[in-house]
Image (cartoon, rainbow, N blue to C red):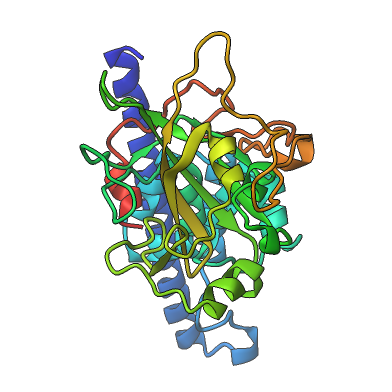
Length: 340
């Protein structure tokens, strides 16, 4: 994108936010004026709007704006940072709408067909998980030569078929969506680092959580969930990492670690085995020693597309259009989303 076009795009988005803010302020002023006028003419209370004005008109304006720009993630981040009221509306309504627009099939599965309901950790945390690679630092069971900072991803692929490979045999009844690893080169003498993330459906009632509690697995003392800030369990320490997870990631046995938080968000890292032109690392036909078979047949039911056009392949896009290669956010809005 040329400098002139980037500047024009930024000015347009800034103007959009200013217009949104002015609309909200004008509605508030009109509300106060009409209230004063009603007091003067002594209108009957039953004819007045609710005293705790819910901001429906404001929200209607916001929804129309975001629908017209196809739920642009950067504009939503900027909107939520304008003031406390818009931040609250975004947390209660806009993040949910963005998730439904970008990943309708995945959201429907996670919310049990009721996307207007609540979801573990909140819709803002789910939106962040869709678009944000959490980065990686050394942990007790996984050492890296240098820390990788978190960043937005241009495109991410989530699959419940992949998620099944991360579940122990006794927990295969749970539903888990897991992304393909985000690849990070670590130098000529090291394998590439893969960073992945995922989310459980109904984690409070899941077999995985019940297994963690039954084994009395303690929370990790240093790591927190990068998406909702809550405490996490190390699945490595809990001995709940099936060998099928390494195969699915294209990694080696005992060369990965991942965590699950109390809200069911998963994040982890692995070392990716380099591939030559005549070999494949992931052999889905091989059985685990403990009998945990990986799922061989990937079907379209395991995928989701987050731009709202279809659910036939596993793509989450963060652009204002469905273009996979479009990087709308750049580096600026990362701090905004981190603070939401």
